[in-house]
Length: 296
Image 1 (cartoon, rainbow, N blue to C red):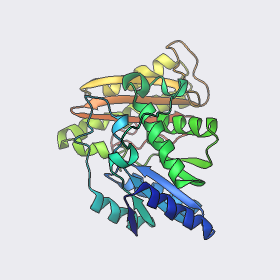
Image 2 (tube, rainbow, N blue to C red; image 1 turned 180 degrees about the horizontal axis):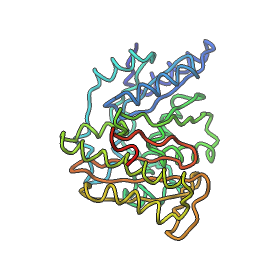
Image 3 (tube, rainbow, N blue to C red; image 1 turned 60 degrees about the vertical axis):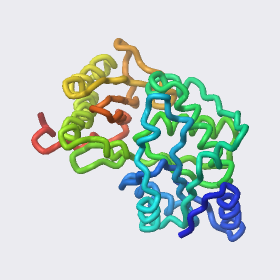
Image 4 (cartoon, rainbow, N blue to C red; image 1 turned 60 degrees about the horizontal axis):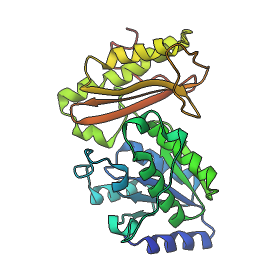
């Protein structure tokens, strides 16, 4: 397995693979890989012959008081996981390679990025869209896979890929969870054992609202109240708990009727970790809850 540092070397490798008749698959990541990322790589192998993984902690998607400097980094360990999952190479550029001197161009995002996380992380999705557009420009015609845990990110990427006629098929892959239901995330590494236990309120919250939805509850305010009631006692703070249109991500008001397919999404802080999770009501399975809580 190769590791490319230079964007031009990475582009050349992808072009050479296509010349040989291979379909290229891209899994963009910020590193600190876990089983969820490895599932993306394995899914990419089903769709492409030449699978590459980008590992780049993108500075433009972090706000001034966020965790850019302490975000976990382990290129050697990540590369080994990529190899074990069947990737052919890793693109691991330096920030100066992706944002060379004089860089001033950004991808402007619209309404899809405005609510949910976008309302609490100004500039975040512009940074995401810009770096992913750069990756798509380097990799060329391909299929790119993203986890649905970052559902709003996925929808923003789908939107700008369509809008800009980029030759990339964007595929969302179901969230991978721990046996106790907690969504796998690189930021879980920030959690102490005690905080990790408190974080289990997140899948419980989603499950409580999903069960009510399946039982016929359609008031958006009631669904969010059920979810918020689980996380409020344990969270350090809550950015949002919302029901939104599953495609446009327009947030529903408390008295609005929830359609038969809708996004339930939340973002909470447990001590120093900002954790996000979601499910699409009417589409996704209810997260597995800890034993003894499933029928509470």
